[in-house]
Length: 141
Image 1 (cartoon, one colour):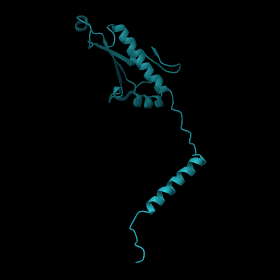
Image 2 (image 1 turned 90 degrees about the horizontal axis):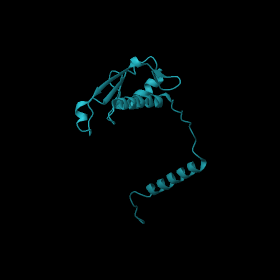
Image 3 (image 1 turned 90 degrees about the vertical axis):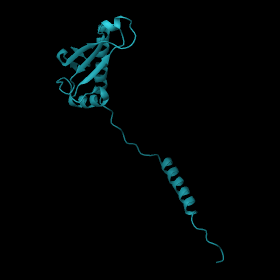
Image 4 (image 1 turned 30 degrees about the vertical axis):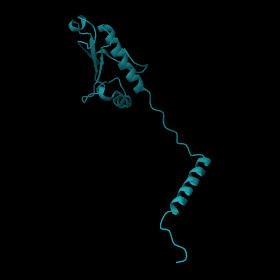
């Protein structure tokens, strides 16, 4: 079981791990051992995630969210399969923790009296400049 927060935990049956060969340096070992981990979590169908958390998770996951509603996380930093597994699980937990925090509502504020005065004065100045433009009338005609 993957413990994310006090309220949210993910059962092992919801996580699917597949192992592939990692890219990058590693000598002969990289060609023989499948150390890269691809962790798949069916977030859309998970009974352990509340609906608002799923919505925020979809937005946070970005392109890691598949069309079928799963999150795919790939870890291939180390040459150790067990370390990569731990890294992938920790990344998933961090993503879910971030989605579990509800956004703080925006508190509307009013503009200060000084800023309103400055804005209106700037508008009046700009309007005066524009009103001086136009055809020039000749005097004495």
